[in-house]
Amino acid sequence: MQGFYTLFYKEILRFWKVSFQTVAAPVLTAMLYLLIFSHVLESRVEAYPGVRYTAFLIPGLAMMSMLQNAFANTSSSLIQSKITGNIVFILLPPLSHLEFFLAYVLAAVVRGVVVGAGVLAVCAVFAIPAFKYPLWILIFAVLSAAVMAVLGLIAGIWAEKFDQLAAFQNFIIVPLTFLSGVFYSIQSLPAFWLGISHLNPVFYMIDGFRYGFFGQADVPSPWLSFSVVGGTFVLLSAFALHLLRTGYKLRH
Image (tube, rainbow, N blue to C red):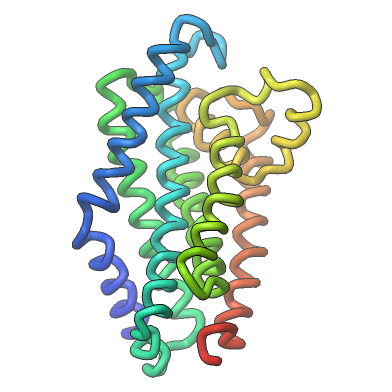
C-alpha cells in the first residue's frame, strides 16, 4: 500500500498548499449565505418546530460546502493532470486501480470534512446547532463527501477539458445541491416538487446530516437516508472502479 499512501499524501498537499483558496474561500461563501438568508428569513420561517431558521440553515450550508469541495478536489486534480500531461507519472508506477481510487477519494473526503468543520465553527458565532446524534453527523459527513468525491473522479476521467468539467458541475452538481433542502424544508414544497426532491440523492445526504443535529428530519428514519446514500456510493464506486480498470480516457 506504499503507492496508495504516497498518492494520498500528494493529494492532501495539493489542496493544503493553497488552503486559502480551497478551505478559507468556501467557508467565507457559506458565511455570506448564512448572513443573507438568516437576515431575510429568520423571523418568517420555522422549518422544524422549536428550531430557529439560522440553526436549521447551518447544517445545510456545511453539508453543501462539503459536497461541492469533495467533488472539486477529485475532478480538478484529474483534469489538471490530464491537461498538463503529468498524469503519466501516476499511471506509470505499479499502482492498482483500487489504490488509485482510494487515494483520490479519501483525500477529497478529508478536504470536504475540513471545509464542513470550518463552516460549522465559523457559523457557530450566529447559532449553535444541538448536535443531538453526533454519530449520525459523522456518518453522513464522511459517506456523503465520499459519494461526491467518487462522482468527481468519474467527471475528471470523462472530461477532456475544463469546459466539459464546468458544464458537469454547473448543470448537475450545483442543481442537485441547491435543490436538496439546503435553505428550506421540502415539506413546504408543492406535491410535484416534493416528489422530485425525493428522487435527489443529495436531499438524503443533507436530511440525514441535519437529523444528527436536531433529531428531526423530512425523512421519517435516518436509516432510509443512510440506505439511499450508501447505495449511491456503492453504485458510483463500482462504475468508477470499472473506468479505472479499463483505463477509459486515461491509458488510451
